[in-house]
Length: 154
Image (cartoon, rainbow, N blue to C red; front, side, top):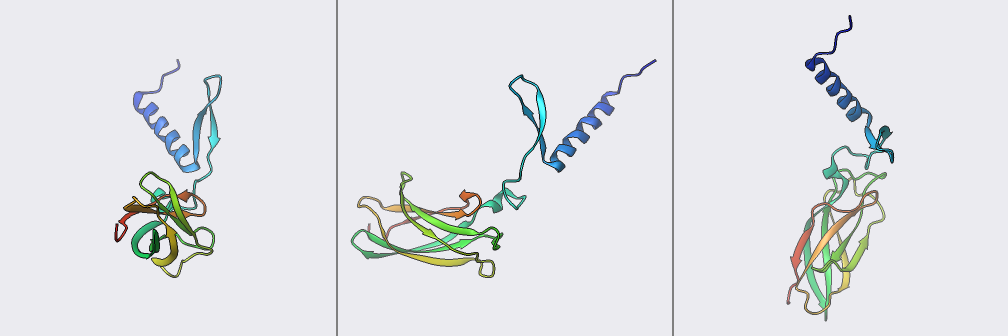
């Protein structure tokens, strides 16, 4: 006589399977026939914590530098900064998302956290009174904590 597994045994088997998928990075992928197959998904970053995929903008100092021109001193923090993956820039955006200026960083700042860099002479059209600064990671693009600042004199 064959006995059927108990509900507890089925639950434990399902839990073991879920843990195996989580540990190995496997998931069930649906095929066009509606069946499932296993696939291995590569990690999105060298870090397992999604919050560390992007640098954070900690501070911004804006100084007028001419008619409709502004200088930006931006302080960035990226806890994961290494030569292999680092914060490689930031951008200035208008309230509607238009990119008004970008600053590129050519190397990591692992021994200097947080760090401040400047960009001079960013043209900001009349009528814009505030901008948002967003950091960029070389592997994952733009994201992280942003800073929205008012433009002095506007």
